[in-house]
Length: 460
Image (cartoon, rainbow, N blue to C red; front, side, top):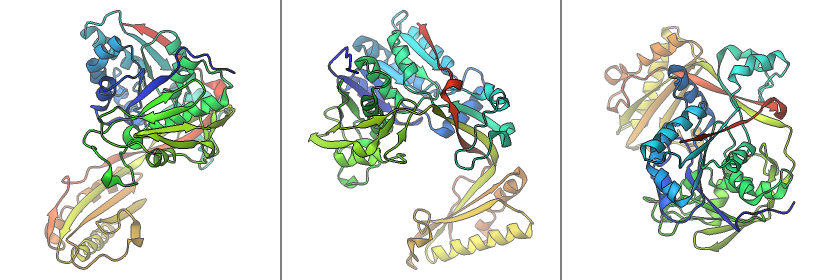
């Protein structure tokens, strides 16, 4: 199918790569140069369970609350410049998030000037029993176990929607599209489909838009942040430029950033992001298309500009991925810092002591893990034997159990080592360890026919 473009090119800027990303990035993207869309990605697998707990405590919550003050700050510029926003900030409560954005619009005197599209239908929690009862097992993709084995402990269950409902919201005039769990790449692909009129079977172009979304979904991770190649020579990381996709109807695109910003966009930095969470490079599976990453061609097309072409795609599958979180048990982590001389030996002795005391108390844990930060915490036991005069070592001990009681007792046993263990403790980081609930991840698949996205358009 030939593209039906409404404009010759579109510029989509990444503003957030996760919930907790740099709050100045969206403003710099909107104010630092011309863009057509601002894409903001907030959701990781564990984020959904956090938001579900928030909504359980307060029905008006369950979304990325950072998104609201950002929108209140940026809405005048967004309206004046005609910039549209796609964001999965809605979490498990996209309608409440949209209502909060509309309230911010009214507060800024923009009544009647902001339309918000709400994409829902991904939340499967209210339907779990029905789905299981009808023989849809939602089996764990890693173990094959049916979800019924942990159903009573499930905290959240969300299907990954694709770009289609985002396109629908944009076509109905939404300036800001707020979604629940959609694919990270869909937030970028959706605007491209809308602008260029790509068809549902335009596999190569859909794959190209998916690759573009994958490159910018983690924000500055493709423009200098967390970059291994010459990391100490990347300029201006106190003010990094977040990436911008410049796409054309034929599926080709470039990755760049605003002039005058820090960071660096090179073939190396883009390649590092491409292999991030890639899986099988020939089968990058999304609800919209299967992209073949081995076909991607990268070219340095100028300073801070990488041209991407040649992307090939295949028909999407008949399934959607489902992310389920469930309560697993309890954990606690305690730390002590030992100073020179014999820092490592002291930390090792402290570990032996606390293990012996816990065993004497008859405490049993599903797992007990010790790390010596500064020696083997990053690279494991293969890091080698440290020098005898290593200046400091942090002992970090963690325990995990299905029941709370043994974990609670562990938290009371590590602090006494300050006075009744090896000498030279210089830091008891964070005080007495806290018992935390463990939220485990359960990946599953569901037929697309079982999930029906819903799009609503709201007006300020």
